Length: 351
Image 1 (tube, one colour):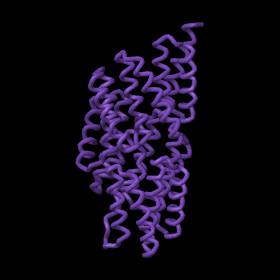
Image 2: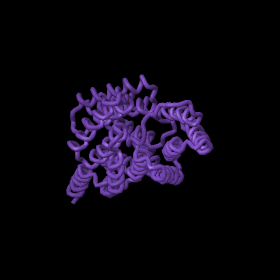
Image 3: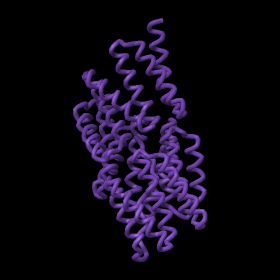
Image 4: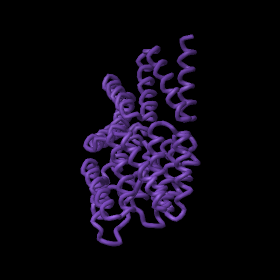
């Protein structure tokens, strides 16, 4: 599960403006996964900034609040807040803040499965980001994620490398951690498990140092996938369940869905089929509830694979076809070809 990167650490204050201090407090809660506390701080920061005419803080607080609301399953308010942040940044004449808002809005499009709109939004944000290595790095990350989903792994790798270089230039440890995480995920998809383990281990070490619970959970989940690929099923299950525990504490349903999918896949391949089916159906339900198209497509394919192994051919075919349609919405060409091959094999086997 690659992570679209809408934001990084807040700019350090040049003065002791109360609104900026409140914003930084919100960011500390945000990184630690205390989303409701973060939202309260961001709302307070926006009010204080408007009262004190701190327009840049108000614009940033609105955007960060929008991202938190989106993560808390309120996509309508999340989009409205980020759109308002963009409009106010344009009025303020701050191209970087405007680019930050466009980057966040494009991230929402990505998570809704609208990859063409997301790519367009990221490119528009990139045009405004020239003087900000931090923003450039995050947009490069996000373009890399789109390439990765669509099977353009070399393109994704190049985007992530550019992102990592941008973050290194400014000493952005959070950005470096995320870039290493996404390099690790791409390495898994390219079949380079040793490189994946190295990148994910680097990312996890930084996440622990920074106290970033969410990123640490993501690294643990993808290290579970590395273990699964090596057929180390016990280690894979332990890592995936540790990630699930983290995501449940954070209340992030998309990530919970991803963890259940990986757990289901591990259980399938270690022969615990009844439990596997339960976990995969939970993964699908959560992805549907959170409107996460990629997660739904991946979990549906895994359940179809399980049912095929159980001889439940008609159910498997229906799920493979559903997965094919979902991957088609994302233009995920490698996955489309994979599922098409599975459908063809099932159809030919039984005439």
